Length: 150
Image (cartoon, rainbow, N blue to C red; front, side, top):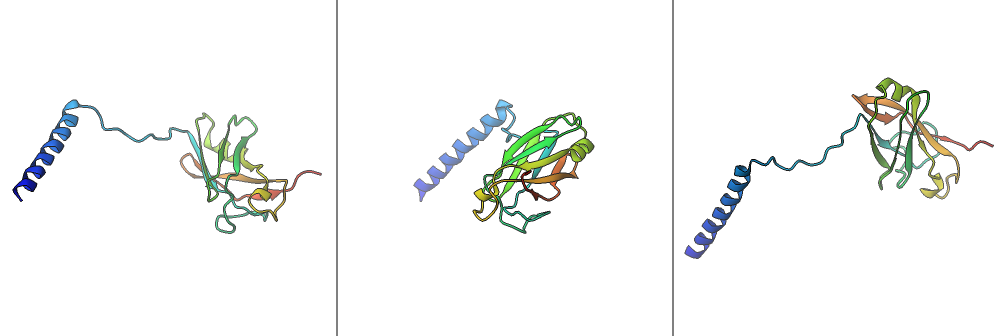
């Protein structure tokens, strides 16, 4: 019992010295990296060829490349790849106003739908406009399938 008590005191002494040295160094604690961006676009891509698809109406489209495309002076572009559940997130630094992003940008998924479900079309795209959720965070309005031009 006395041996355990000495070990415990020794361990507490080591921990105390370590904490005191960190505090005495004056070094700020290590902070996790933060995403510094003016615009964040995040959402869910469904594996479906219906129209105006919403989250939960179909399984997620894993491994799809989602592109942010803008026109009419909204000089902005980015891309992200969906995770295993069809979710994506992209962060972009820009001086473009939020109204321009919402009004002149869209999300385009060119990855063939057949890659998530062999019964779906092998060509065409999924497209969605953007809606401002909060501050500079945008979500898809709802993806729709667009068949290739003949």
